Image 1 (cartoon, helix red, strand yellow):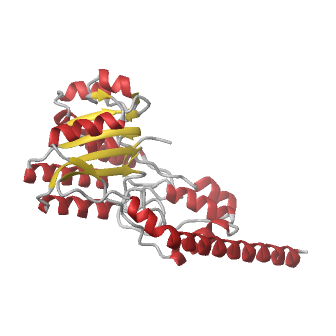
Image 2 (cartoon, helix red, strand yellow):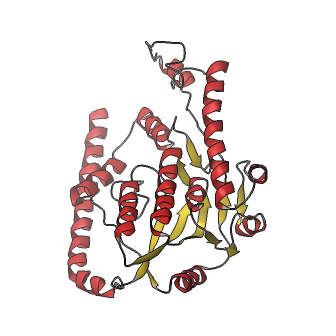
Image 3 (cartoon, rainbow, N blue to C red):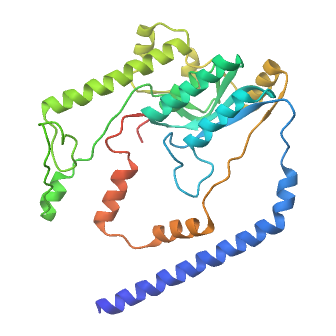
Amino acid sequence: MEKKSNKKRNILIALAVMALVCVFMFSSCMGAVLGGMTEMSYTEQPEESFAIISISGTIQAGPDSPIDAGSYNHANLMGYVDGLMEDETNHGILLKVNSGGGTVYHSDEFYLKLMEYKEVTGRPVHAYFEQTAASGAYYISCAAEYISANRNCWTGSIGVILSYTNMKGLYDKLGLEEIIIATGDNKGMGSSAGDLSDEQRAIYQSLVDESYDVFVDIVAKGRNMDVETVKQLADGRVYSAQQAFENGLVDKVEGWEDALAYMEEKTGVEGWQVQFASSASWLDYLLYKVEDIMPKSDMDNINSMVSSQLSGVPLYMMAN
């Protein structure tokens, strides 16, 4: 009976793979046919322009998936801003933000890159918030001297979070034991199979508090506020666009076209947005989709869930 079930499952997987191949080949053919039309429909980069940069998805080292060219790609963005510093035809940067934040490290690194851009070029940086511009996304946007937000935007979430998934109860239930051989009582702290001691909690809290102080200082400088005022706002909560405006976290509640027009007025040139292409091949795409449909054990699903939550990584990120 079990062999029959496995055979049926393998047949379904094979059919699914064949279907994906057919879909991909059809899409590729259509892309080849329509490619010229699509390319002609893009507006060419003006001789003089300001750069429109999208901050979308989770702010981290790479994109959310290997086939997603539209989500945040740290290396691409850092390199792009470096290039803009050398580009005399560039007149500024307009950030188009739709992100709930990401890692402390990558948020801070891109913020510093934007501050370097301003210092080196003397050109303006503006930010526009779409649906969400929270935590690390707000952190990055503090490099902008002007911030506006869509009226439906949620922003703020000024704070730091670090989480671990304690799987000790599950391990006990499954009869698994994690053996740690380490130097010092705190070397293995944060293991998924153990509890944190009071001392270890205090250690992590001190690290989180340090990142929080940096965040508060960044907001205070970017928004011309005193630190104590920012701390009253920085309890981790999210704000509506109107609430953010009333508390000085954004300069105006407006639509994208208005934000674009203001940047055009400020710089005297039009905006232009580069489209970063995905480096993934058709095989990457196919394997990624096949992995999605492959049957997974309960342990596979648990491990996938834990890794997707960036467990053990300090985050400037709105809780989901």
